[in-house]
Amino acid sequence: MVTIRDDDTTIIKFNQSNYTVNEDDGTLWPVLVLTNSLSSSITVRLRDNENSATRGDDYRHGPYTVIFPAGMTKASFNVSITDDDELESDETFNLIINNGSLPAGVFRRNTG
Image (cartoon, rainbow, N blue to C red; front, side, top):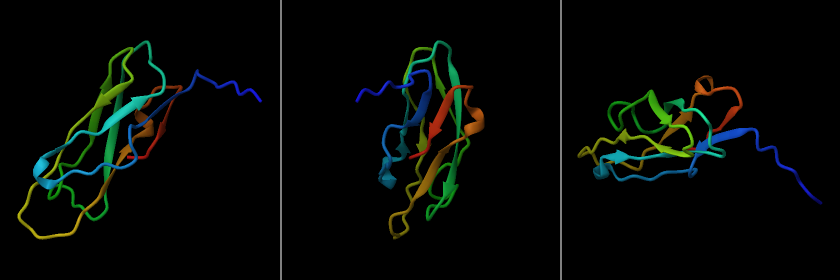
């Protein structure tokens, strides 16, 4: 069987499904990737969603903005992580690509 893939569609996604960062690292650098390079730059907006980590206390909350210059397929952004002295278990939050910020023909796959 031969499968012909539609390469006209571009997917934006995180380069990995989960990230781990130590509090004392201070910064998380998630990476977004495009499945195809584009002829013009695009701006992507992301937001966060609390789980057990608390916005403002455990990390700097969004919105976050990532710019892909024309021809580039990888871009990163930073999320500040707060190093506190509290004895606590591991905490989590989600990063979500806002669908409304994507140009026509670019689709998201939220896995970060």
